Length: 311
Image: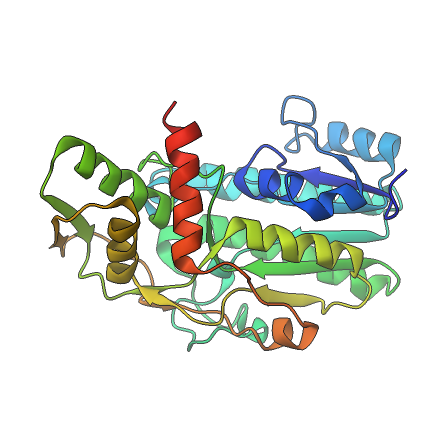
């Protein structure tokens, strides 16, 4: 029996879930991490039955259909429908089973596209969303609000939400059709080096700024928050508090990989929001910061890409 009890982790086979499972703090819990074939979160009755049977001490909800700009634009119905169903079903099943602690993982895509940076937690639902990932954002807003409504009706139910910034790391998806920015950059630059290509194309002018955190660092924050859920804020950004231009990410990846070609820009391509930087005041007050540097995080991710993603 672990000292913290039983933790039900959804999305255990995804990037965030796998980083949570391999983190040293995971040993403090008895973790249930059913696969989607073992627990279909889009099926409300199945989810209710699973929670009623297992009765975990806490649920960490990291499951979802995820992807970059291309995937979101190509499949808006699935990103809205499936993510809404999963969020609603796991939250209500946990509440119905009497689970008193629930840690919901949301996304900074919930913030309005025109919100001033850095993005504060009180800015959610104050403006229009970014169209390129609106469906996913709406699903995450629904789950976040549902947790807040449960707390409004039952103050003893600690249903809290962490809002991570953009993530990358071990167990990421590297296929450009499904990947987020940084793993796509790693894949593109690696291919350029292997094929002897002298140019790599960047979408847009590369000046848009993004905050990317190593997924292993998010796992550290999630497991600490799970152990301290009674004392963390109802909503809290988890991020770096600083960002980089997309051009900078390309150049850093090139340095790590050892590719010495040149970059070109396709100004006709969509780039999303010009900046998306978290306000980390609440996180800082909590006493946590991400420990891994950008260069080290890219190097660890590239090592995973070489040893596992390409085999």
